[in-house]
Image 1 (tube, rainbow, N blue to C red):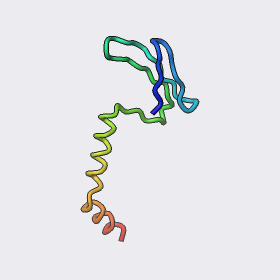
Image 2: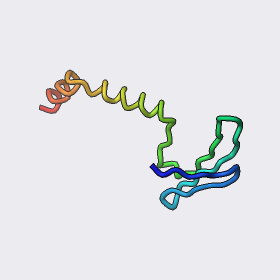
Image 3: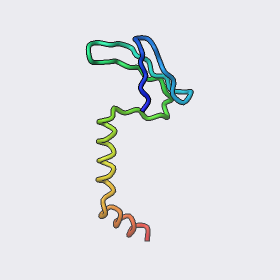
Image 4: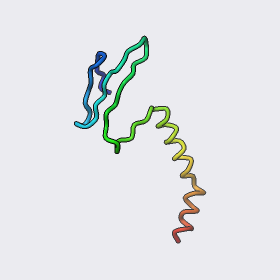
Amino acid sequence: MLALSRKKGESLIINNNIEITILEIKGDQIKIGIDAPKSVPIYRKEVYLQIQEENKNAMNLDGIDALKKLLK
């Protein structure tokens, strides 16, 4: 993991097309702005993990077996 220090108003660039800017710092909370192409999905980690879990549950064996039967 790369750890960087930034101050309010400072930014960093990822992959030449994603800019992350520190907008506000209040106590232990930091507000960030993300400027990225619309094709780049951006999720809070807890939401991303929930999506991954739901996708995993949707791919249960019964669903795979039903899909195999459908494709035969």
